[in-house]
Image 1: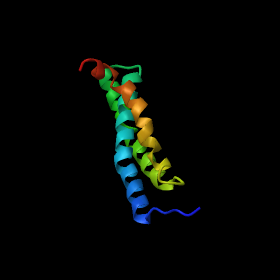
Image 2: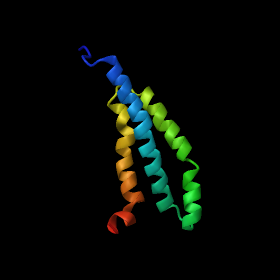
Image 3: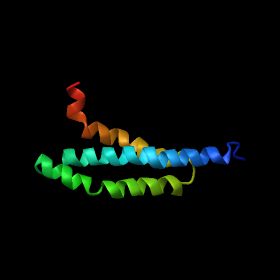
Length: 94
């Protein structure tokens, strides 16, 4: 089975998954942690912000280490349920 897509398109897809998907994942994971940590809100935001750099780095590395370009988007797909929990009160107030 040959891959008919141009190589540059696969690289652009992985780069977009790394940059945009990694940002979405780290933002959603930070909001999720800030919502579920059992401490005052100010402290929860600070504690949740610390691992956000590691989340972004892991998502970036995942995008280029995955076997194909479609799997590179998994952190961005995981950001959807994390963001739903992290931003639940804001969604109801709209």
